Length: 232
Image 1 (cartoon, rainbow, N blue to C red):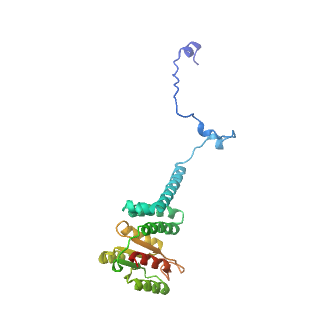
Image 2: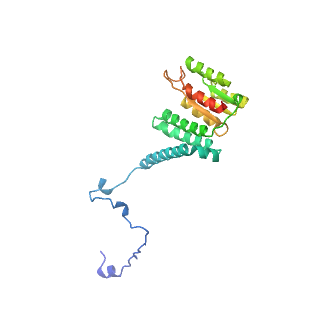
Image 3: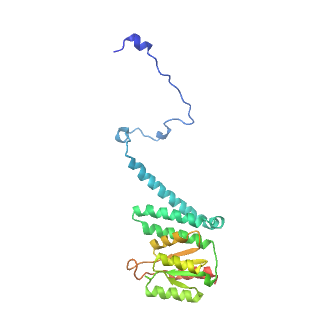
């Protein structure tokens, strides 16, 4: 035990006062005086941060997608690279949505945003410069409707059984615009292949009998797109 003389002569650290631009502790101004959870011990594992970081990224992507949707007419004219950037955002959002079991819904919404951007640019091409790509899983009713629309506007239609064949058709035919029909998952892959290089409108399908069987589509939307692109 230190004697009184040593205690009195022991050096003491200097207390330094720091001037701040805000009052320390102001974040607790709303505290009502009740005991804090865990007696004020807020220890938490790193996983808590990473879970909320992922949620923050997802929310940020949603806000960015909404802004692109609202500003698409102006951005499409000012920045030709926007479709490629938008696809990148769509792809990242798709990966996040899979963890929540919402992949197909989120991808459908993302494709709608992409289509809105493409439509607002109001590009027109000749009948022979437009290509319609469809999958082999359409129902007979849907297939007959697609062929009727293509016949009215003299637009070629190709059945793409695989993504590789779709890319081959585009490479060989060299269209100036494409109307593609596919499920959400295949559409996302197809947009990745052409995003930023070729105007594409992607029409998603309804799958009443499950994937790859008797798929249906909105023929009115398809005709509206084809008619608008060929300037008929």
